[in-house]
Image 1 (cartoon, rainbow, N blue to C red):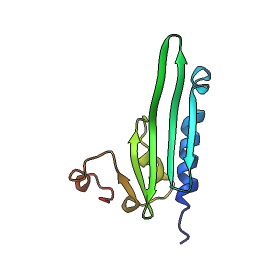
Image 2: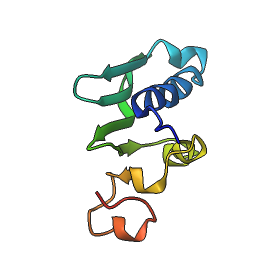
Image 3: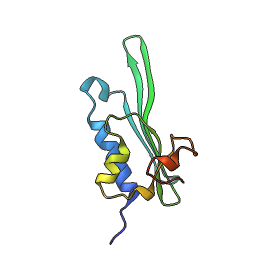
Length: 110
């Protein structure tokens, strides 16, 4: 079986979430892909009236051939999306969970 291209897959998932934003929020949506260091982010940066918007709902790294989910503020959970695309649980690390808790998640420990 051919190995999945994790870089391409992570970029696809982030693009999907970026395009799901309302028209008002699209202006504040930024996608950051650092393919040299394998860091991928979805950011919200801008202003809504007098309120500053700055947040990172999705942050994913690829380390040692595994997808590390560092931050996931999505409703469906991007780990579930990766599973649907065929990524095995052993290649997904929930980096936002404490190392001692990861053993109970069913995903990779590190």
